[in-house]
Amino acid sequence: MLFLLLIYHPETVWNNRTQPEQEGIYREYRQLIDELTAAGKYKAGNQLEASAAASTVRVRNGRPAVTDGPFVETKEQLGGFFYVEAEDLQEAQAIAARIPSAREGSIEVRLVIPRQQAAQV
Image 1 (cartoon, rainbow, N blue to C red):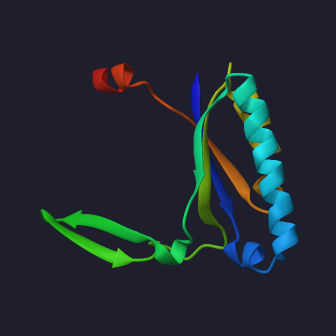
Image 2 (spheres, helix red, strand yellow; image 1 turned 45 degrees about the vertical axis):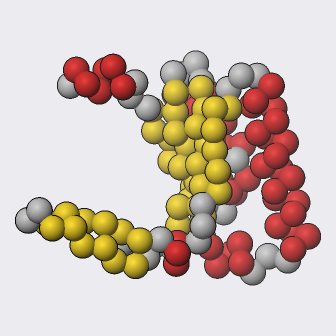
């Protein structure tokens, strides 16, 4: 089963960390990614640019409207993602709990519906 693990964290907390603190957290991420890759569970993942650099697109009455930034004010921002393979939801949740940002933010775990199944709905 494939899962998308959406990593949310407060950007202000990250921005207030010292460079050595940030480097330590990046090391933790690399170690986890290396371990999951060796086990064949890590498929993809990346850090995202800060939410201030985001844009939001909506289409209303057939006309697209683009606004700067995220569309809601939140305490936690989407900072990145892991795309992993797991045996079941419990294993995906266990992987999510090992993501360093889970200590101060949250990890949303979503089952990915294979394209073939989505087309049949």
